[in-house]
Structure formats: structure tokens, C-alpha cells
Image (cartoon, rainbow, N blue to C red):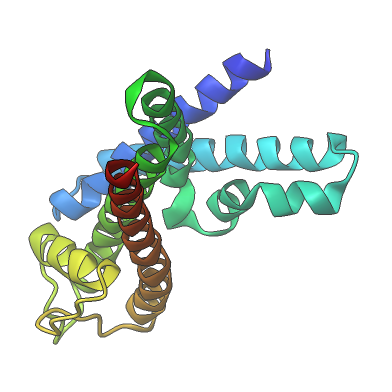
Length: 203
């Protein structure tokens, strides 16, 4: 039963991702489509909230449960992070790679790279929706938002695209913090892989 429920949550996360992304690609949205998008988002939020409350209620150690489920908490508290429920799929993909062929190190790197791309995409959608209609903003379409997200998450920061609203700057801070962590993990994983290859050659 729990497996079926997890599959339902993953499907809802995918539906939310589509509904969440649609306004970033289509600026002129009809009232009926807007109502449908809002309905999908509320249904997904309700399902995520019920799952979190049920998990906390049935957990033997509620404090430990909260520590072990940061994505579930984030998906309920922060609207634009709800698609992170799809991280379950990324985790399963990395586990499959680890079991099939290439080992744990590359599987971890694979998951972190996919996580970085996924977070950059979500941030690009959110910053586009937030900044597009603001006077003086330089992020006017999804392409601008994606370029900003990629340069931010990789800590390059060219500065040709940047947020001008409070919400956009808050998102930028979160993305910078996550970017530093993710890039650090990728760099360390690649370095460890080369060290292992060098050690194997010597042996």
C-alpha cells in the first residue's frame, strides 16, 4: 500500500511540475487554464501535506522523522520546491546505475549532477515567473531565467542576468547556497574517482 501511495505522490509531483512550469513558457494564460493550474497545485499540496502529517503522526521518533525527511517538509512549506518529490526517481536511477555497472562513486556523482540540473530548472521557472513582469527586470523569458539559474548554481555568476525583486533575491540566495554544496560534492566525487583510477593503475 505504501509503495502505491509513493507512486501516486511521484505522479502528483510530475503533474505539479507541469502546472508549475506552464506559466514560465506561456505568458498569456486564459482564466480557465489559470484555474486548472491552481487546482492542480492545491490538490498536490494537500496530498503532500497529508503525507507529511501522517508520517509525523505514525513515527515513533517524530524529531528523527523530521530530520530524515527534509524534501517532504520543503515541498509543503515552499511551493516552488514541490517538484523535488521527483528526487525519489533520481535516487532510484542512481541506485540502478550503482547495481548494474559503474559503482557507488559514479552513481553518487550522477545523482548530484541530475539534482543540480533539476534545481536549476525549477529555479529558472520560478525566477521567470517572478521577474518577467517587473519594470526594470532583465529576466524576461525562460531562456533568461535558465541562463541565470545555470550561472548561479555553478557559482559562475556572470552578472548579466540578476533578480531585482525581494522574492527573486531570496531564491538567488537559496540557489547559491545549494550550488556551492552541489558543485563541491561533484568536484570531490570526480577527484576521488581519479585518485581511485590512479591507485588501481599502480596496483
